[in-house]
Image 1 (cartoon, rainbow, N blue to C red):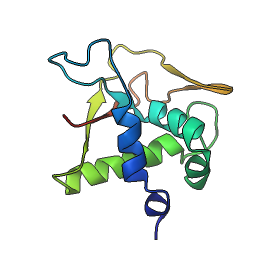
Image 2 (image 1 turned 180 degrees about the horizontal axis):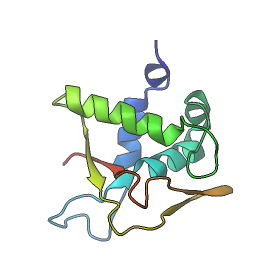
Image 3 (image 1 turned 45 degrees about the vertical axis):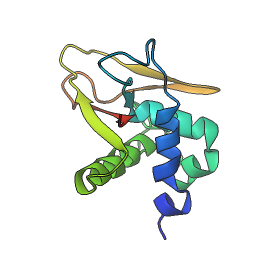
Length: 130
């Protein structure tokens, strides 16, 4: 089995995304989007064993590591969305055009500054379908 299956990350992430609420749940634009950095921070907080199994690296600027939990989440979610028409999570990108800096908080830990700003790459976002 894989780490993803051992920790039932499909179900875990769907539940986490289902718990995301916006200002108006009935808005015509639908549910709010959540970045891979935000998912990683929530996973670290609510399921630290799964976060650790994925390498425990929160990513961001200054970590000195190329493989992070947000990267792994984005990669695996993207693959599942591509190959499974019935996958309960959908994805999109936020253009980094005009974004100079984006920092994400982590309860009880140092903040994470995205490395995907200043024309380095678009930021992946996810939400529960429907």
